[in-house]
Amino acid sequence: MGLLKRNPFGHILFIKRWLIRIFGAVTHRRYRGFNELNIEGSEIIRNLPHTNVLFISNHQTYFADVVAMFHVFNASLKGREDNIKNVLYLWYPKLNIYYVAAKETMQAGLLPRIMAYAGAITVERTWRAKGKDVVDKKDVNPNDTENIKIALKDGWVITFPQGTTKSFKPVRKGTAHIIKEHRPIVVPIVIDGFRRSFDKKGLRMKKKGILQSFIIKEPLEIDYDNDSIDEIVEKVEYAIEQHCSFLKVIPVEEIEEEEKLNKFRKWEY
Image 1 (spheres, one colour):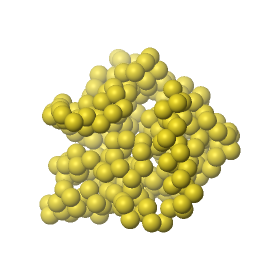
Image 2 (image 1 turned 90 degrees about the vertical axis):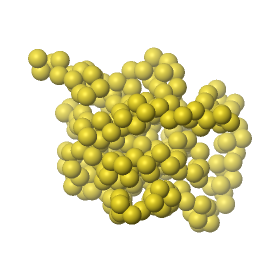
Image 3 (image 1 turned 30 degrees about the horizontal axis):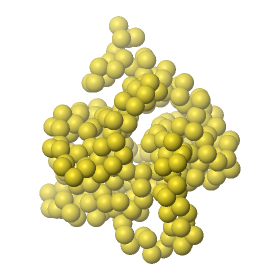
Image 4 (image 1 turned 120 degrees about the horizontal axis):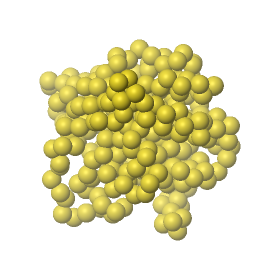
């Protein structure tokens, strides 16, 4: 019966393990070879409990960010010190890692559907549909929040609280509600270089020789009883370096580059 053992969402762990192994082997050189992933804080990963950990991060591509996290988390747990040398760390990967993703993204083609089996918790975005903001926002699906609760109880959950790959967009209050209600250990991650390395989906390499950064920070200090939703939102924005105050320290040329990307990105597809 070991081959048919399932996680709380009904996914067969044997299949999930092989999907992570295959995708990990295929993508490894994207972060160590064609480009170089500079990691900080892998010791923090090793000191975390096995369950009820919520990773919060800024977001630059649909899939490359999450794949990098699977690499870094598993490499760290196998004793790698701020590196992802020797992809054999994925032979026995941590199988209770989940990531929150938009349902429309994970249903857009065969490859995303396969990748979803590796750990996606799909949610319906109430503020956005088909790449555009919506005026008439839908009510939050209670099944979505229940699935995140189940995933936290079973293991680790990755979420991108801005809900978009655009920089310096507001953090969604839904993340703060999850933090306040379920009281997970909240670990911030700040990434950079992925937007320059990959296309928006994170499936196609756009440029080689890019130094990608992956910084794991100490868990947030949160007073679950007394911190308000707005206070938690602000803490999250500062932690993932997406608070408006960080705009003042970004070089002008980087802002101009981002504006150019946003202007011409629609011509990529």
